[in-house]
Length: 204
View (cartoon, rainbow, N blue to C red):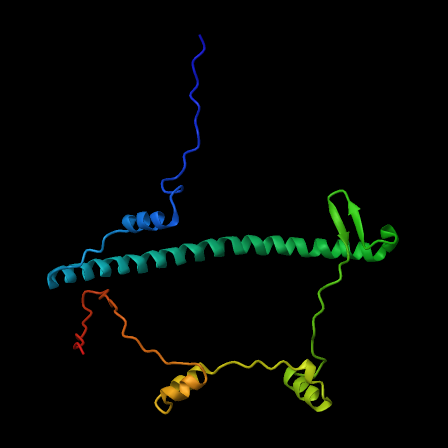
């Protein structure tokens, strides 16, 4: 008697068949509840945990950077050796191709056993003539009236507006569709060394 096989069907993820309003309600229920510390001692304990995690984070990043540096140094040498062997081989094949253009016929490429060789047209690039600088090129374009070849990028100088915020009234800012926002943001600046001392800032 042959064993009976059970048919396995794809399961629909929980909530996939629910309407959007019920999905949002379900997602809200899945969010972790924020437990607010009730005492200063509890807050101090949480800041201590934050400090430990920040120290671990810094140490982990340092280890990662060190490992990446070691791996890069290990493989850079190998890649350099490969490039040193590859460059003369490419030059040798190029020299043969230039000396035997009849092998290509009317084509720019040649199909060989292990690959294709040939010539490609590179993407156009603009370079200055010998003795010229881009600043000199720009002045020459202005003098000759070639303004279409000059790119001028206009943008709002946000930092200048912020620097002059005391002299600007709200009405002035609204005239050109801006407003300045400055918010007070909460921060935790953990002490990452046992001897580090900080001055407590008074609450405003």
